[in-house]
Image (cartoon, rainbow, N blue to C red):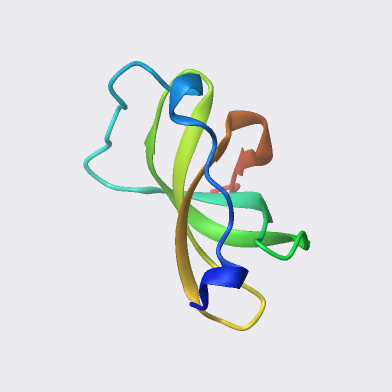
Length: 80
């Protein structure tokens, strides 16, 4: 993914505690703001999380895989 399309991570200071890492990533929907300031909702997986932030794997609108830390409020669980 080109650097200018990569999202900005939640600041490290907002996630000071060690993250919880599940044995199987959880399916989610996530709102991403990319490096160009574009917002989009994507399907993805929660790889790790803290009280305030979630590390996600997602596909952007061009189908490219991305990883980033987002605010927990930007994530919702996919219905089973």
